[in-house]
Length: 290
Image 1 (cartoon, one colour):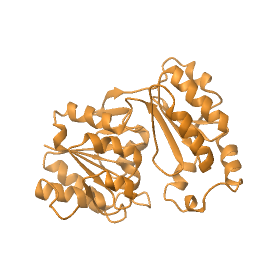
Image 2 (tube, one colour):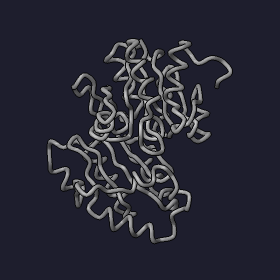
Image 3 (spheres, helix red, strand yellow):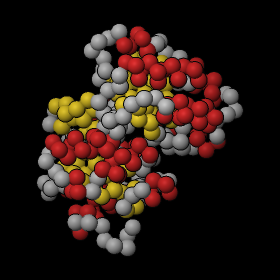
Image 4 (cartoon, helix red, strand yellow):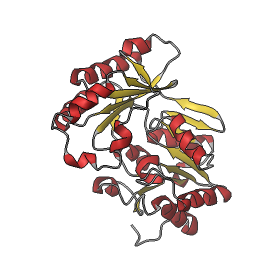
């Protein structure tokens, strides 16, 4: 039995935010052969479930970069930030007055000033032109009308039942991003990554896709050498390092490709299906395809 861990955006989803029939067929084929297939994404668990439901897929998930892991209808592990970490991260985001949102066990909360802060940076002239054509731009800048909002981190921390798994900071100004990266990496016990050129994500040190993969493998009693991780961004690197075999998408940047064992086709060429088929057909990817 193998465990396939699939990133979602830029990987399982095409640039049109769709799961191709080819990818669905490959996932279901792997399941029919007794293998496990999970989604391991930076998205919140409820967002992952909504997308999977659209395509009739029932999969274990690791949401919010593997900080919220679910299988068989139950929560396996929740890795949350401490109150002190939350306060420090929020303070750094507020210093730069950037749009940011918080992923919690009660859903996603957007900073109330997200629209105004986004409008300000878009009109500043500091946003590189290539960001506007990035397939993630629309998804990452959008704030749904029905979004939950908050004014300050203190207002959220007053709820003793609310646990925060991830901060998502939209940083469209590269100069601001550089400053925030330096500040975020200095936070004790934190883990910093990104899922695009213009965002920063901060979790607890143990909150990453590598840990999410290990939790799921342990639950299904699958050795790590029998796990396959497929992704395209820097937040996928921890699961590349944990998995027995790592696959970078053809649309990934060269640095991500260099950290993988195999490079598949792009997300618009059904790269997930291509990678799954190679593993299923050969037990490993044939030499010469790397």
